Amino acid sequence: MEAFKREEKYTIEDIYALSEGERAELIDGKIYYMAPPSTGHQRLVHFFDREIGNYIQNHNGECEVFPAPFAVFLSDNEKNYVEPDISVICDKDKITDKGCEGAPDWIIEIVSPSTKQMDYYKKLFKYRTAGVREYWVVDPERKLVTVYNFERDTMEEYPFGEEVPAGIYEGFSIRV
Image (cartoon, rainbow, N blue to C red):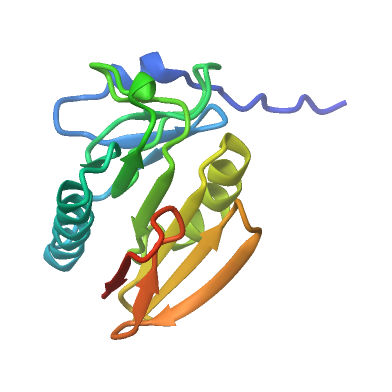
């Protein structure tokens, strides 16, 4: 009889034990290493950070926007740790010195060739079940923004150049 190889499970401690400069995410106890972002990726992160931050500031909003790297602990089970490209958090009690304890209200992930499967499938499921209200997948290659509004149970796609309405803010939209 053949023995089954037991898959090793990791915890947040393993994330903190990574070498300096090494980045990874942890989903259901499995480590996913992250490649350094491209210049185009960083431009988009900065764009969203600025647009959302300016909107919140100009409307005296309570939410805060955090660009990556920013730790998000989706659950309290030590097996899930992510660094979304953009996290918008409206519940100040979730923000700690370590990052966000629980689900942000709005998450934006910018797809790169190495993260496509993760952003469109694994993270979609994780974010939805963790209680994220809205999730945007920005795909520069396809020039498309896919918006998942989990509160309304909708999914819509917007080509770059069109206004993309933010579900958590009435009257706010972003043209990518």
